[in-house]
Length: 377
Image 1 (cartoon, rainbow, N blue to C red):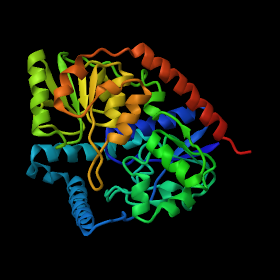
Image 2 (cartoon, rainbow, N blue to C red):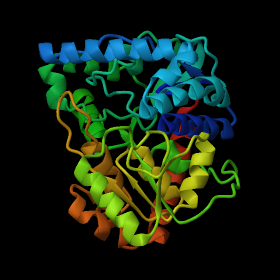
Image 3 (tube, one colour):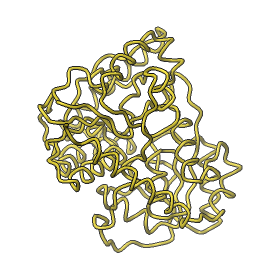
Image 4 (cartoon, rainbow, N blue to C red):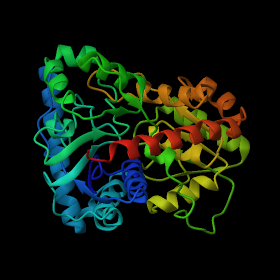
């Protein structure tokens, strides 16, 4: 069977790469041929003029970013944080995407037997991201497949209330009803699907929690005694930076970061996605505020803390997806809302035997879901 995956595979971050890679390998292990399908970016939905101005500003910054990446001789003009970000974008496009079997040429509306939409925030249609927007193709519109399903799809911080406020709830409902089967990864997404379709979706873990990366993690000679900081650049507040540095100094550990440059860390490391897993595997602990940073910590059985940020319209928030993930794995005590909980959360032990029991059941559940739905009757 020829299976297409329509996901966020070109979004430049390690989480997007890993979930794309994991889902591809899982489906291939079931005997199918897999290719990635691209979506056409569409303008987002705006509630206010301020949101539209922010979008236009973001879009212009992306244009400048793409220009500098193309003509990388200009990198030296940039501050270190921005330079590291652009270097990662260039490396992602030139080195990481080929590992997924993806070329620079976009593969739109490819003819496949079955199209799988997911995982990641493919249904998060109200984010002001110029690289996504309200792309109806991420809801399966005008697909060129005999069968349409999703796997571990997420609405992110898009809520049913916001869909109604923006006047697109009915459109989203019509598109969801055309799926042959829907799988989501979190309760917010499940509630939206149920309300808009009248049907209860399947719940499945993100593929990074399902796939076994042990063969891909390289053996690297790494100096120990370090703490990994994994987040996008500029997201930690001064208070959070101070608390993290104080903890590291007390423990006599270095602070290292990758993916997003952090000005309070001792070292920024440029590495491949699989090398990232190796660095996390050898770390003393991990501080993150990302969904996949949390998962990378869990699959490597590391002490970690996940900073939870409340979701507000027009701003980044991880509350919906992060709390849901931690609750499903029995690790809600690892999510913190303030720096006063940092030490407690990092030092409290994790019973990874119990976590692995949950993962084992979810792995079996995922394989059954895909086996049952990657068929055409």
